Image 1 (cartoon, rainbow, N blue to C red):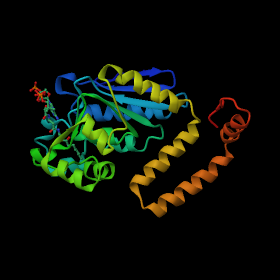
Image 2 (image 1 turned 135 degrees about the vertical axis):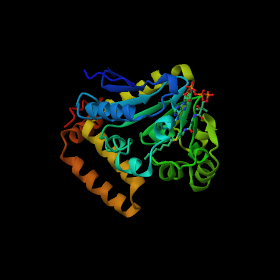
Image 3 (image 1 turned 180 degrees about the horizontal axis):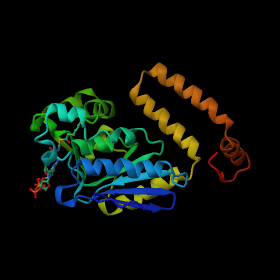
Length: 258
Ligand code: CO8
């Protein structure tokens, strides 16, 4: 198993766990962490034995943003030619669904990383926001694009332009978070939700994730075309036959992931 210095990696059944682990800086995303996160996620993604990922941090912070101390002295040219966040492009292209289990701060790049996941489960302690404006920058990992789609244009504008953060209840009301869980139950609930996803047919789960991703990144007519083609193609799978036979025979489906 690869040794990582900024993340912890673990497999629980068909669920791959990645825990951000830079506790001294509230899991600030430095270039090493970003590289290790992308690598660990890609390794899980290539493994047919993994049907869902959980990404989490500590009780105090999911991630308090990009590492400000690492970024501070960089030039515009360095940020563009050696963008330390480039490996997150791989994260965005994962086929396997990722659940962000967020406790404490998810700010700036931390909020954006949660939004790069498919589902956000929040502890009641979670706090979300894009405070970059306070640092003299704007969000750079999708915050100005994903947040308006998640919570609406005007609420997103208020958060991005003022840097105000929102608690878990407001994030849930706004649609950013699918559920709030008491802090002590967050990880168990994430595992339970991940197991449900991992029990489904892997290629079908991949297809559903991709269609959902397309809905966020293209026009409705492109998305509808993608959905129709993908839907039709799934009838080539044994798992589609198995899923429907199981319904007819009133039993649980036994998916073989092909
Ligand atoms: N970067 C580096 N270090 C950090 C960060 C961070 N983002 N956040 C916290 N830390 C460090 C602190 O410096 C402190 O270290 P030390 O003990 O050595 O002083 C330690 O973590 C604990 O933090 P605090 O003492 O500040 O803890 P508090 O409980 O008082 O406050 C907060 C917690 C409110 C989360 C506070 O730490 C904070 O405001 N952090 C910064 C939040 C922020 O502004 N995040 C946005 C960063 S910019 C960004 O994410 C842009 C991403 C886009 C990049 C795209 C590139 C293409």
